[in-house]
Amino acid sequence: MEILGSIFNLIGSICTMIFLSFKDITEKGIEKNIGFLKQEEWFQAYVNNEKHNKLIANNTRVRKEIGNINIEKMSKTKYYKRQQKRVENLINKKSLAT
Image 1 (spheres, helix red, strand yellow):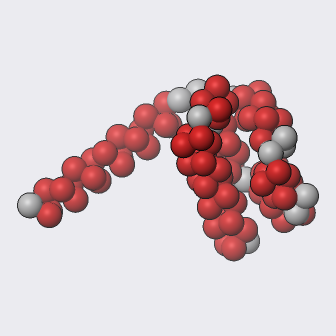
Image 2: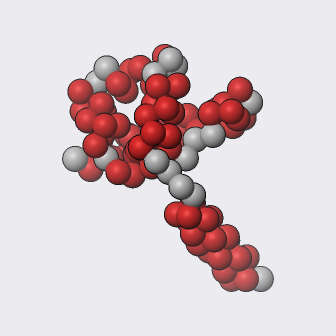
């Protein structure tokens, strides 16, 4: 049974990745989301850090993650916190790798 559950989780993850890859993320959308996030104190700390700012400006994966954010849903606390955590985790992970 555990194997079957693991298989379903794997299939779900693959489907999510495929769906996100079809989402049209444009530079305009990414810049719009960055502009929104720059108003947030937690994101300003990343922008003010030279290493993190370079990742935000140049790293394709970080920019895609930011572009995936639905700004209209950011007023919902649960969605906001989830997106904040995703962006922070990715920036921190990528900064350790460089």
